[in-house]
Structure formats: structure tokens, C-alpha cells
Amino acid sequence: MDKLSYNLYTPKPTHTEMSITTKQSTVKAFDSLPVAIGFLIAVLVFTMFLVGYDQGQLFSVVEGQSAYDTMWIHELTHDMRHAAGFPCH
Amino acid sequence: MKALTLVGITLSSGVIAGIILAFLNLGIVEPTIDKAIALEVQKQVSAGENVNMSELIDYRYWQKAGAFAGGAIYGAGLAALFGVIFVFARNKLPGKNNKQKAMFLAGIMWFVLFLMVALKYPANPPAVGDPDTIYYRETLYIGYIMISGLAALGMSVIWIKTRINSKKIIIPLMYAAIMVTAYVIMPPNPDKIEISMDLIQTFRVLTAITIGVFWGILGIMFGSLWDKFLSKEQTLAAKLY
Image 1 (cartoon, rainbow over the protein chains, first blue to last red):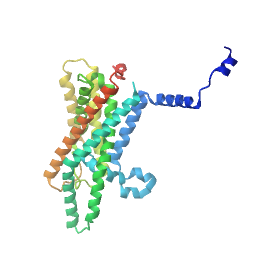
Image 2: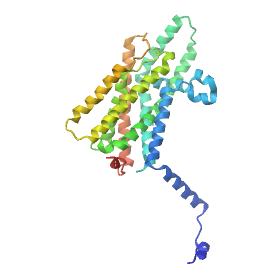
Image 3: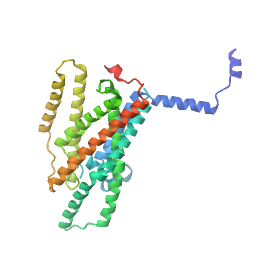
Image 4: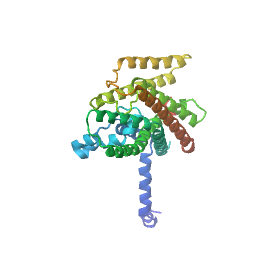
């Protein structure tokens, strides 16, 4: 079959098929061990900041200076912070 | 290896272990936190401060509910570290199966990241910490965790790389020497303790137990899920040593 015939008679992938292919390649890109390890380390740093260290810093990004008085994250994780051995007020 | 599966089993085992920890704390540790807060309130009242009791009670309900979110977040975070170390260390961990290997690693991590740190900077209930020293205490605490964690990591690498017979004695002694030095050099917690030491000691023992149980559950969960979903997968470990 010449190239023209191939183009004419070979069925093109449908929109759905292309979407599945794209999704598979996206999943494949994230399904690599170095990416997983980097992600898990980011999770470690962020969660330890939330449970052990936040004194209003995270919400101050949107709430401004008052976040340091309300300390939502600190109060939410307060009892776990004490029970896990982290310093607290 | 199936990296997304690794992330899935790691975070789910951490979140489940963290929520179980929150349930345990609710029954075991919370009574001592409530007693410490009652002492704190008593002190405020004696000093002539106005304390809105109904607001305080509502607040405590919210904090106790928040402990479940806190447990899930705490569990996910420590499990993330656990998962990364397990991937690298699995081939060298003792144990006949992944559950035993995971349990062994969990025990080591509880010892290195909690118990050794608690000897220098033990957990305190409310009514002990001074808000003015919080950042200083946080720096000391994270510094000590880093010293203990990195020392253990260094000793593990030496353990794998050396072939001397007496390493079972020498390497733990090297870790002990580093931790004794750190214990002596690092400054003490600056806050004065003004409430009953009995209450504080009870709190410390109970938290060491519940955090130990948390690590145990994390190890069992992670090892079981690894056996179910990743038992046939090769890890990075083969390339490392």
C-alpha cells in the first residue's frame, strides 16, 4: 500500500482513542521511581510543617498578618502536635 | 517498579495508621491534655484573667476533632519518609517477608526519630510551652531529629559497605557516641516546668507508647500492602549495592 492509500484507508484514531493515549503517556510520565520519591519527600516536608511548625505562616499567604493570631492550622493540629512530641505553646 | 502503586500504598498506610493513632490518643492521651489545660485555666483564673468556659469547651471539641486530621497528615508525612527508605533498604533489611522487613524498619524509625529525640527534648502537654520561645524550641527539635536521623543513615551505609565481623558492636557504639555528644552539646529546652511532674511524666510515657503503636501499625500495613501489590517488583536497591 502506497502512502496515499495508507492515509486514505487506514482508520484515524478517534478523539476518545487519542485521549486514552494521552492519558496513558501522562500516567507513564508520573509513574517513574525518581518522580515518586521526589513527591514523597515533598509530602514529608509539607506535612511535617503543617503538624509540627506552622504558626500561621501558611494562611498568612491569603489572610495576611491576622493568620498569626488565629493560627488555624496550629489549632487544628494542636493535640496531635503535643502527642507527637513537637514543641508547642 | 510501579511508582504510582508505591505512592498509593505508602500514603494510604500512613493515613490509616495516623487515624488509628488519633483514636488511640483520644482514649489514652487526651485525658492528660485535658488535665493540663484545666491547670492552665486555673492559673489564668488565679491571675485574675477572664476565661470564657463555654467558648473553651467548644474550642476543645474542635481541637479533638482536629486531632484526626492532624493524625492523617502526620501519618502521611512519616509514611512518605518510611516508603522512600524502604524502597532503598528492602534488600538489606532483616526478615523473611516484607511484613517483617517493614516492622523492623518501623521499629528502627520509632527509636531514631522519636525515642532518641524524646530523651533530650521530651514531649510536653499544654501548660508547659512558652509562646516566646516556640521558634527556638522548634529549631532545637528539628536539629536533634536531623542529627539522629542522619547519624542512623550514615551508620546504615557503613553497615552495608563494610564486611568486618565486629560491626554489630562497633556501628551501634558509633551511633551511641554521636548521640551522647549531641545530647551534651545541644542546649536544653529553655522553658520552665510549673505544673505537676507526675502529669508530665504520665503524658510522656503514654505518647511514647501510642507513637510506638503508630509505627507498628504503619509497618504492618505497609508490609502487607507491599506483599499484595508490589511483591514481584524490582526496586532501586539492586542497582545501589
